[in-house]
Image 1: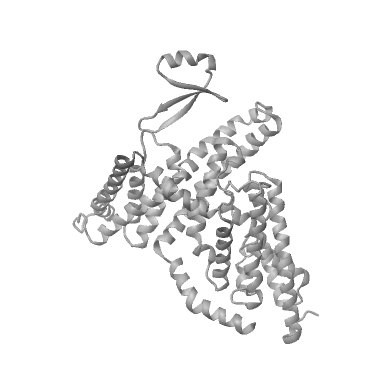
Image 2: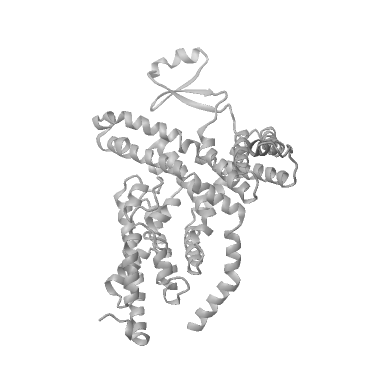
Amino acid sequence: MAHAMTGFMDWMENRFMPVATKIGNQRHLVAIRDGFISIMPITMVGSIATLLNVFLRDLPTMWWGDGNAFTAACAPIIAVNGVVWNGSLAILGLAFAFTFGYYLSRSYQVNAVAGGVIALSAVICTMNMSPAFDYLLPGVGADQIAPLQAAGLAVTATDTGVTLAATGSGMISTALTSASGLFTCLIFALLSTQIYVWLTLRKITIKLPENVPPAVSNAFAAIIPGVAAVYASAIVTQVCVSATGDYPNALISVLIQQPLLGMSQSPLAVILVNFLIQLFWFFGIHGSNVMAPVLEGIYTPALLENLNVWNTTHDVAQMPYLWTRGSFDAYTMMGGTGITLGLIIAILLFSKRKDSRTIAAMSAPMGVFNINEPMVFGMPIVLNPLYFIPWVLVPVITTVVALLFTYSGVIPPCFIQVPWIMPVGLYAFFATGGNVLAALVALLNLGISFAIWTPFVLLANRQLLKSEPEQREA
């Protein structure tokens, strides 16, 4: 058994990890990761606004009905939260286009700000500026439909009132600029930035005299590459419209985004992602960073799309994605990757090793807030055969438990972005819009992690008795 473990670790270290490290450092994947991290402030403020409206409007309406006094009294705050959403989650795709273009350009050591601006411009070129939309006509009753139709307006009666079907001019739908447009933003930001970088590195630029201020010189140097990049995006858009009648966003959604997000919802895919995160970490490589293109590029859009559906329908049953970015943090990473908070509790209760108890005691305050590097590198867990099995097994089993509760409909999907330092239980509660059962599932998974870690803590005690009796506590 020991020989097999040693052989496995040697193979992983010499063959697998170099490839994984190279993938984790690939500039385009790093730009995706950093781009999503950079827009965290607006995703967080939009999520906070949504969460506040859950407690000020949605839950009170569910409990006390429409027009209740509490919601009416909170109307100004609810309105402010709506405005915050317009300035944050509604423009998420555009913000990401800029940050992705910025970081990708910076990785090539060219003008990063120009790269971000060009990516943003190119993405907007792909958007339909005259979208069809339905507008609710306030104060109009069903008995007034006939005169409006006689006037040539396309109006219909619905459960919520009367709607007007119209076509905007010079307007961009938030369906294109928010989370639902992220894949289009990513693809065209990548295309335009690569063109800009390629031309810039080959010096196909406007060169000004050396005495010109650098800011002016840099701006002129980006003109030719920028023009080519934006025109390329516009030409692709026009070809799509002429050939299919659809703008790129619709085609990308059908051909790329929906299949990828659909694949991400497979229980096997979710388990595999968690397993790989643990495997990378065991060999000292930041697993969450290596898997960030998947976590942020696929599961974050799923969370944000759920949030859009909630803002539109206030119905968790209509959310399209059951497992999102928040699900990992809520149910499989409490106390940090590997749910080492369970290990800390097991050590403090059962360990006879003075070194382990000291590290656990020092790590406990940070572990409550999901920071576990002291445990990972202090125990250590990295490259420690004793802890390999629970390190890999805990997230896999807790993932299965959370999947069962979520996919069976017992708890809703995570749809609100919550600060990752939120303690166990509270994260799941807020991420699901205040669902108590979700918090209990998170606590259940903490208990499961404790149960899995405990035998290996006892095994460490046994090893101590055999080889290091001087380390035992008096």
